[in-house]
Image (cartoon, rainbow, N blue to C red; front, side, top):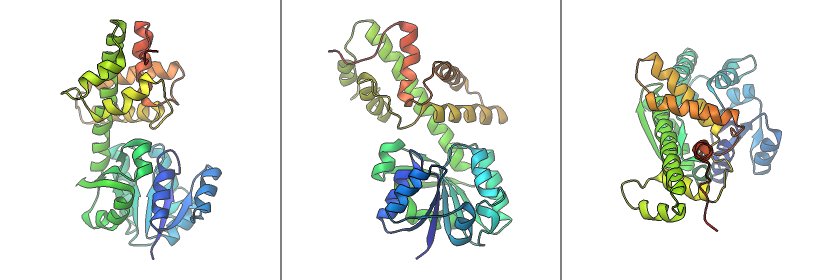
Length: 296
């Protein structure tokens, strides 16, 4: 059986790695959070350094906070690429820029190693139940090598195009998700200030054209004032920053995302970065002087 490496055991990575273990995958794990490593070892994984994972594994998954960390884990002294075996495939599931993904692809190609950028959508709930959506960029043969593991961790996996295409798709996904949360937040703040019951407004509109997966995921959390993060504002703030950098690099207008980034900046100043991105509503609530909450 092939040995599989998994680096990054955070909100998303930990349940994804658990699902691989439950499926009988021979898994080597690594993370700075030793408690997370101990938990996975208790389920049958083995703790390993990045260098050991590179030397011993045929397939290596990473899911990390940002592009510079991904590159450090792969290419720093003692990193994954130090003794990586020719013919291995690295799959980065982090949310990074297309340029950062292509850098990793090109650098690993020099060693005869495949690289696929395959960020995910679905948040912690879908990471737990194994129904994530993977959006991938890279070569078909490398995607095919990863497909059995995508099928364990997710409900869909699409090879969008060449290296960087998965990261581009993730940026588009994050624009839509976070802008929809902002639109929902603004609308429900208006409804509450006008005296409407937000729960009844939600029930009235969710079956119509305004209904969406985002509406169904976030309004119940918002009206119950539950901002435990499935996707932290800090991570989404980073993603929208990447959107703006990528948009500027290719002269693609991103007016709404620019406004959204400043809303997130205000939330950062207000100390909300560790809350779920449903807490975008707090920006609008503060401006309007109301709270979008379930009526007693």
